[in-house]
Image 1 (cartoon, one colour):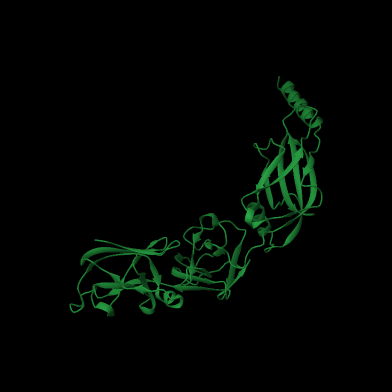
Image 2 (cartoon, rainbow, N blue to C red):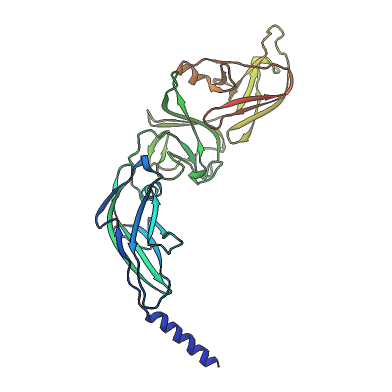
Length: 351
């Protein structure tokens, strides 16, 4: 019985090896086609299609799509995936942004082209056949300044995946027009690195060193683990990492305008303080305070007139925007929060 079972298994293996499978006949794109990826259509798909492979055994055929540098080993693809319908379909649709990310990972810069081979591996049981076709592909042509800017990396609060990147705030001039400068506040860890991203993927990456930023530059290493103000200036191709701690200063704290009450970082660009506010200047009827960083009058945040939105005083002065001290309507214990995340920093006071 044992011998019979072994013989049956060997016969089955021989049958599996004996059947033949044809290679898939590639259909689109054609040989030597040129594909220029379009940033304005980043979410749209590029479709690759082929005709069915056949077997003389009736076994199910599945397909794997590979994209490799022309002449490179298929074991190291720039992009790979089962075809649509879990590998059963004779086509695959790939978003342009995913293809651009693959080209970025291959070291191509904005607008550069590369010769590629797209391959389809048709498989049935243990047998497979490969079909290859040559094309060229051109990366997105990015503007010099991205519309949005994110940071991600092992040094950040969100990890290395740019899909979770921290959005920096694009700055505006007095007319409300965007300028080519960004600002954000977060903590960074000296044991890791980070990069700037124009999208929440790896298609447009900025790095650098010694305060100079460049597309495709090396990841940046913060000097120490602390909270930072990050500024990026695409006009001058620079970045700045300013270690920062926030305090409250005003006529409602001990020692008045000569004092500092430190705030505690909460994560996600937010600081908070619970404090027993007092009247430190009986001669001044207007109870008020400001946010000051590093006990330095050069790092001050005030409120925009008529709102709870805040802005750094140096940016306000440069852009001709009016800012004011923050009024405190009620003395006594209150919690003050300074939220510097997102596109519009704000403060809140809860008594």
